Image 1 (tube, rainbow, N blue to C red):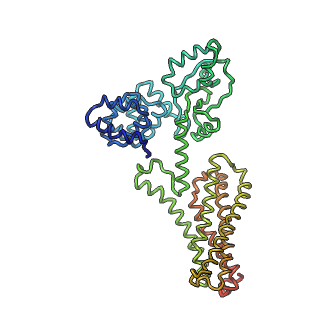
Image 2: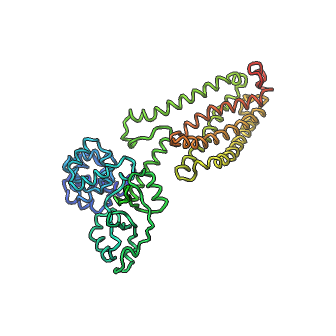
Image 3: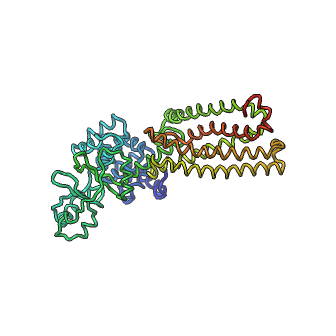
Length: 476
């Protein structure tokens, strides 16, 4: 966890105030700090000390600070604070942050806290919790400003002054009709600059973007980015405005999604909790499944090498370049897979672009293969010239260099094509491309890379180093 330098400097002072029982000074000190910094300070304290200091925060401050704490810290504080104090803190949180917290807590704790909320807060919380996990409904907050089209600008400003304090954001005001349906959204700047005697409907152009409460949260991320908005309205199936989603909630979703994709690309199942709070057994299961799959895949590599063991015995020099060949093919495949999966996630390419991608990777893979092949070719000749090969390259070192050159072109080209096309295949099969991680692609390329390497060697070296293999492998 990254800690703000301000929090690091003030943590000893806060600790001393709590230990000395100077809670009035503590409250005043923390009241003037940003909630995120206060959360960093409490996260660095022992649970008992953090709970003691938390009881003396101003109620509004406590709710904001609590929302910035990591889930495991929140759960620990609730256990230390007790139900009554916890309910006060939870009630002071915004509705969307409250729902997110209750999602993370054990079921019995959530039930106890929801039951102790005030009737109004309980109704709002249960409404949000009523939407399936992963939907926009779980992100939205009911704290926003809505006005009527027939109101004057003066009436609208009075309404904002009266109810704006509790709103999640004042950047945008939402216009609804008599049945609660959203008819437009207007930026506050337009209202402030308008004639006080004009009406809200005079500012309306009925051009707005909405989210549905049952939409996946990832679509909220895309819309917020596409239309460059800090908040978007949320409607139900009847087009009735039920809440808004703000940029801070969307950033959390985007970060979580990016984390999951990075973990999957790294060759493991996405973790359901932060690394440090995931149990050893759960962490082992998440990593072990993919490692088992990759291990079985690498067994095919061993089988391929067994098939070519006669070639290795006849020309031991070929085995010296196995790591180079395997790693080059696997790395090129992993690079291509990562690029394509990310481009798909950003909507830069779709299924219909597969041939364009194939053509680009064909050219790019060929260029990279020639480049790496030249490096291998030159390396063999330099090592031979200065005697570092210790005679292992034999008098046919020039043919060995050509073999490495040709094999690298084939392996790198194949890795690039395979790594770029697999995500398209998975997307066509309605699967998540990120689920086929770069390590799996590398494993598959390892097997086929061996076949390409030894087939190339047999073709080029059949009349020299591998000529005695003709009776064993007829037709080569």
